[in-house]
Amino acid sequence: MNRKFTRQVKIGKIIVGGEAPISVQSMTNTKTTDIPATVSQIKQLTAAGCDIVRLAVPDNEAALSLGAIKTAVGDVPLVADIHFDYRLALTAIEQGLDALRINPGNLGDRDQVTKVVKAARSKGVPIRIGVNAGSIDKALLARFGGNITAEAMVESARGHISILEDLDFNDIKISLKAHDVPLTIKAYRLMSEATRYPLHLGITEAGTVNSGIIKSAVGIGALLAEGIGDTIRVSLTGDPVEEVRVANEILKALGLRNYGPTLVSCPTCGRCNIDLVGIATAVEDKLKAITRPITVAVMGCVVNGPGEAKEADVGIAGGKGQGILFRKGEVIKKVTEDQLVNALFEEIERLIKEE
Image (cartoon, rainbow, N blue to C red; front, side, top):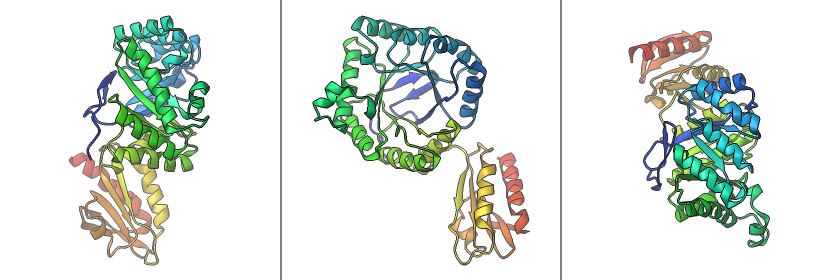
């Protein structure tokens, strides 16, 4: 797919925009002042395939905790999420954070914004302008009949952008998020046409793992398929590690990332004579411990399985009380049903060692 051309910004070791790979972001849900818990969660996120981690900075105590967190996690790019108090942004920069998420129009008068921009420029710290549908200025909304529209979201972002551009600051990326998927898609399409700043994609307040995954996959996936977007964050109510897993699956499904295993599993039908659902679930759970990009197939039919999944690196296909283990479409051996999962992972271990 042809990606829309955007400028590049650098967040720590990660480049966002241009032809750089689309990066995955998440946000800690620990108290930032709880340094050990926050560091532990950042490490869990990066182990799951997260490229950039954002932290909430609601007060000065949280801001002063950022330096110790940054030191503990090394070169993991960290973003400080700041609202209203410009002094928190200054402290975050002093503490060594790699980027800011702010809306400059919410930071106070021009002098205060100028101080933040000057500090960010001196340290090479980019700024993400993050517009959420639910927090658009009421005066701006009035110009659009009081309705939250994609046009209003874009206008809000453009207003914040102009503040930074007037200060000759262009190290910017943008997000325009709503829980409404069509609204979000339209806003990003409009913004993509209006600017060449890199875009951070997401569906905000998407919901729990069940509903949130669907909304995020549809919204983020649709935009990525059109070549729009440079970095993504899946927002889910729950463990942020799950956000990273889902984000990587979205990128993998579109051929935009080669990370971790891909599971190929057929739907059940009347020909199936094994507990395919239970086996596939067990395989999926065990694959979470593997970061190697391999394709694993779990098929219900011993006759058609190897042929339908011949592109898989390794797989199993069921029969009646037993199944076969195959590799690159070639049958290796027959295995009883209760040993299929073990046999599969023994073969996966061999495959990883060989390569």
